[in-house]
Length: 339
Ligand code: DAH
Image 1 (tube, rainbow, N blue to C red):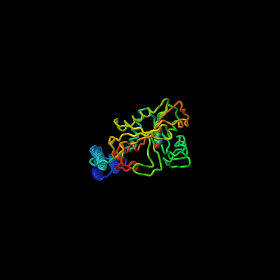
Image 2 (tube, rainbow, N blue to C red):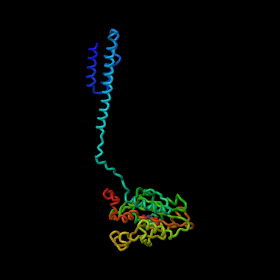
Image 3 (cartoon, rainbow, N blue to C red):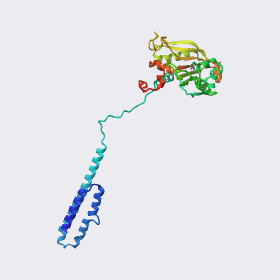
Image 4 (cartoon, rainbow, N blue to C red):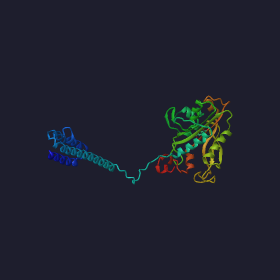
């Protein structure tokens, strides 16, 4: 019996040493220590021993049992830590590796400028409104006092989508939509994209941007127009910028003006940016024509107003000294990354 015990012990030890994973160990545990295990079988045979032999043999079997149990526990924990070690090795992060560059986008220069313009006008109490880029003839021309046969239409050669549907040539269309939906006092701006069938060159693009402004209330005069637009010019170009109002013509305003600012590059002496003029034209404006107010159901004998349309692309190119308007639309990253 002792011999059998020794044999079992030796076999179990070597099998355990060779075991490669937990399920093998578990099989061995069942094989030797389980209910029908080999060691258990030996224990069961104790009954056939004489009472003198029993205690010594019992001790041996118990020792063997304990030994095997410790071996199994050891082997299990060794396997476990080996597995952890392997896992850690496989998942090692090389912290010396250069990190992946995270690319964040930036604002397009036009958006920088629009945001600044919105800030300036909002601080003067203007709301921002939106208008559709596809407009009807009525909003883009007709109600703005530009009837079908008006020569002013020629200056805004237009993309027609259908007989009465076109890509808006001016954000002024938003004036009409606003006056239809709001009652005076009205103080709104509408920044947006406009379209004209223009040839592309350094200063022209068939797509460009305007910021429309409209104020309607009782007792609005040309002084309000001048004050607001001078304030705007000073905030966008600096407080020593000179502002010049020239008489002009727009069908939807009377009187009408065009507004120039002294060139921020040369201070008025004449340079490449202002093409030698010393002045840069930035907007058209005027007192809202009574016909326009009337068309929107606002009584011109009670209310008056002024309106303006600012060229956003022009403000952007002069502010950042961009020599060619096409750069704003080509989306060349080398250009855009500079802002
Ligand atoms: N819509 C004009 C243009 O595109 C600009 C303009 C002039 C807008 C006078 C106005 C204004 O609101 O009063 O040329």
